[in-house]
Length: 272
Image 1: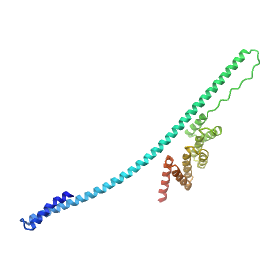
Image 2 (image 1 turned 180 degrees about the vertical axis):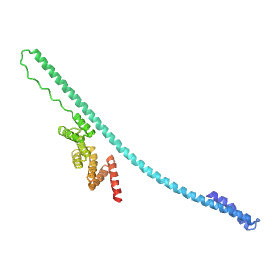
Image 3 (image 1 turned 180 degrees about the horizontal axis):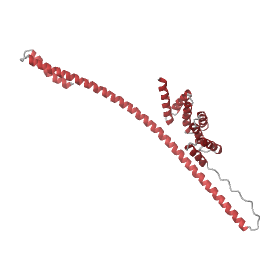
Image 4 (image 1 turned 60 degrees about the vertical axis):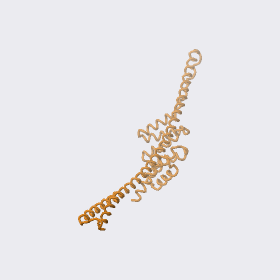
């Protein structure tokens, strides 16, 4: 802009100088000077227009940068929540492995004791040839591993045998109500009902997770599945209330992200 003003100044000076009579001026020279001035004014107008366009683009770029920054923050929050979830699952898996190792060790010891008992009995019979034949000794009952029972039920669930899996998870809870796997068994009873589209039955099972295992990480997941079951049953008001409760009480959880999306989708449909 300054450059254009500098270019115009000498021309205006020459025109004024010629008009004052200090230098000879003819109509041709004045006409040419006026033409050049007109062209330069057009160029100045073009430069101003380009400057305005550049300002608009600069403001748009700033807005885009702000939106991108917000998206990055949201993604970082999601990554943090998922990382915490993975850590929790890894800890649970380690606990299950430790428990399985202990149960295996106990089973092996029981088997050794049984074999030793059989060996001792056979030796006693061989030495006491004329002694009365003792009554047969029943082998001790082999204890069933809670991990094995749970894994059998989960395998059937994973293969889509939801009715069978539901019964097996229920049997697991009856046999091992104090097991560390009890909360998972209760949760998958709800999952089995949900997979069978028995949403009312699913709500009942998920609520037992809330009531009986309040400290478990699966509690918030059970709440989300209750809300989804309400939604599937057409109980929209109950579903939205539960989604809102999850967002309020567990704002950093992955379940809260799902709840937010459900609330946003509901509001979008409502505005249409």
